[in-house]
Length: 205
Image (cartoon, rainbow, N blue to C red; front, side, top):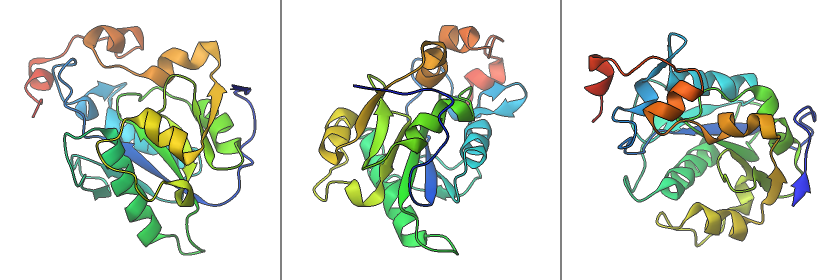
C-alpha cells in the first residue's frame, strides 16, 4: 500500500477527462441519488463541478441522463464497470482540442462532498493510475491501461487489479466524503441533513 498526502500536487502526466457514474439503482436511498440536493445543488451538478475544479478537460455523466454531457451505459444494471468502459470509450473517441486525453477520473454521483484536495493524490500518481484502498471509486487510470478483455460484469476489484492501479491510503478525515452516501442516514451524516421530501422520494425511477 502506498501512503499519500491530501495536499500532494497533481503531477501525473497527461490531460484527463472525467466520468460521473449515475446508473445505480439508489434502492437504499429511496430516491435517485443524482437528483438529491446538497446545499441547494443537485448531487450530479456538484460532482461534475468537482471534476472541473480538479482540472478535467471533459466531464461526462454515464448512466441516466440528467441534462449534462452524457453517454449511455451499454449494459445498465450490470454494475459500475460497464459505466467505466462506456465512459472510457467516449473519452478516447472525443479527445480534446489540444490533443488526446490520456487519463480518466472516475467519480460516483453519491459522493458529492468530495473536495478537490481529496483527489490530488490520485491525480498525482504515476504509472497506470491509482485508487484508494478499499474504495475503488474515485479512481484515476490511464485509458491505455484498461484491459482489452474487460467486461461490464466484472467487479471493480478485478478491473483495478488487471489495470495495475496503485492502492493509496486515504487520509482518515476524507474517508466519509470518499465513501459518499447510499442511505438517508449517511446523507445526514455528510451534511445533506434534511429528510427526503415527498418530491425527492418520488424521484426514484
